[in-house]
Amino acid sequence: MSQDEAKVKSLDKALTLLDLLASQDGGMKLSELSEKAGFPKSTVHALLSTMRDRGVVSQLDNGAYTLGIKLFEYGAAVSRGFDIGTLAKPYLERLSALTGSTAVISMIDHSGIVSFDHAYPASGVRVMPEIGVRLPLHATSQGKLMLAYLPQRSRLALLKKTRLIPFTPHTITDTAVLMRDLEHIFAQGYAVEDGEYKIGLRSVSAPVFDNRGEIRYALTTIGFFRRAVSEDFLSAVDHTVQQAEKLSAALGYDITSP
Image (cartoon, rainbow, N blue to C red; front, side, top):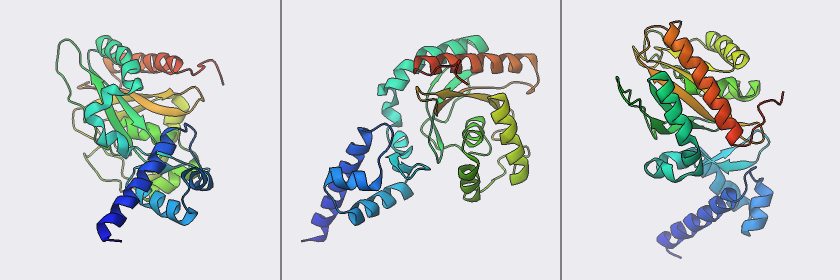
């Protein structure tokens, strides 16, 4: 067998595994993938390990594999074709109209954040969001929101692999300080970024839950607010949380559940 033939066969097997993962919302264990694909466990493990390292698949705390956030980066140009894009659009537009700022929705998995759609206000200064780009976890409201909702063990493991790069003088670069901030975020139910990623910009992100009560997306308002305690920013916080709750309900989440 030639080297090129071997590469094609490996790619075909990898795509088969991705097809299986796409058909299963809750993720699949190694043994289940091996059985359904008809491949040896060693082959499946090698392919999954490679794809996990590249972000194409993600491994959950229980060991199951799911599709990874990298696929959203590859598909950023066609993200509007996803059901969540269609479902979320009215909430994005409503949030932008209420706040007079840019509204963004981002995909959350256990390793990162990628924004995939947005809405602009009808007038005023428009902030261009970074669509299809993996955002820093410690310096954005979306990233801090994701970290805050991770189990403690997973959060610590991820932070050990994350460089707390100082994007601005306001970026949190001390792990202990960041951990305290994350506890506060989880308690209040939303995250604020106060000039930590880009000078002059402030944002607030609220969680969007699926029908199983798991955080899947972050709904964000971002703009040139003067201060994080100004009246217009605090109003944006309220509107962002409210629209995130409504979108969660549209996804089947019971907002009255504890």
